[in-house]
Length: 330
Ligand SMILES: NC(=O)c1ccc[n+]([C@@H]2O[C@H](COP(=O)([O-])OP(=O)(O)OC[C@H]3O[C@@H](n4cnc5c(N)ncnc54)[C@H](OP(=O)(O)O)[C@@H]3O)[C@@H](O)[C@H]2O)c1
Image 1 (tube, rainbow, N blue to C red):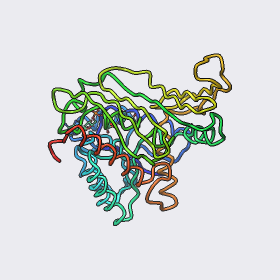
Image 2 (image 1 turned 90 degrees about the vertical axis):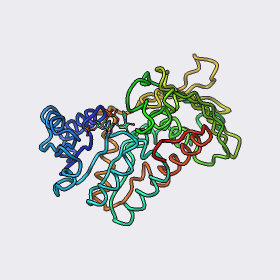
Image 3 (image 1 turned 120 degrees about the horizontal axis):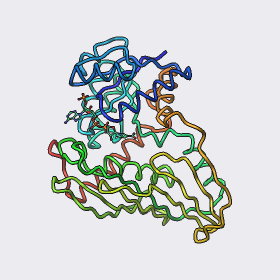
Image 4 (image 1 turned 90 degrees about the horizontal axis):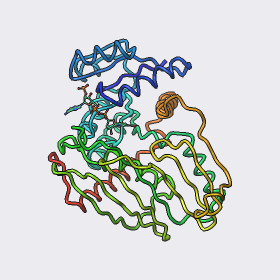
């Protein structure tokens, strides 16, 4: 049984709590052990409502509990780097929400410390861990659409008014919140041989990005056309086009269905529909990967190697640099 603790009693923490309850009921070997919040009353309410054994009114207190084995960090991006380091210093394994940190420099620092101390740290970018990812890659590798040439993916929600999204000191903006998913989708599908990036952006009045389009140009001529926005809900659809067909993926934030067409401009040319296996919430796969790593003593998860976390952070740094966008703490 692995004792899991959650840092930050907010929105996604509730979803993880539900996931852990379902995993526990299924016999996956997780214990809903502790929650830590800056506010003791919030921690207590969360623990009571979600079924955790312990509630702490500070993160430091939670980390001093030697029963805690795995910490899920569910706070704003601005705080991830420092909190990962705190967990590592207390020898707690870490599953940290996306975006892993606010800057690549923070990610480098946190991962170097984890390596030095020999502690498991991984990024909770759930789309990397879901089984559909391997199914899509196998399908593309089998030549189902011929040679892939172009992909397009979008992700957006009407979230511009959330404090965590609006405020630069919380490393807000669309890029780190939703852009990270489309960048990961491109990296998982087309790899990392990116020659150059082009982008355009609209900013919020607070100085963070509201929405952007990004084109990744690959060395062999492939292109990934990506859109991310905090201003509206989008279709979340992805299309991967090849010279002998195309694949539609629904959706980029949790791929549940892929439809293979012989011809992208003939909706009747469906060859095959592939559905993802049933899931608890979809967040269980990242937790299961941590449990496997803890069992074997691995310091990173194969679904999201540290090098990939760093690569995506560097891409996001480069995009922000090209927009002259800096967080106040940089
Ligand atoms: N994987 C997904 O599908 C998914 C979905 C949504 C969000 N996320 C990610 O999860 C993380 C948290 O997102 P969320 O929507 O859950 O955020 P949230 O509800 O706004 O905040 C989560 C927690 O962060 C702490 N916090 C909030 N504002 C803070 C501030 N000004 N200073 C310091 N701490 C603050 C609070 O912890 P206390 O309880 O200690 O006060 C709060 O409960 C982000 O990294 C986000 O990108 C992932």
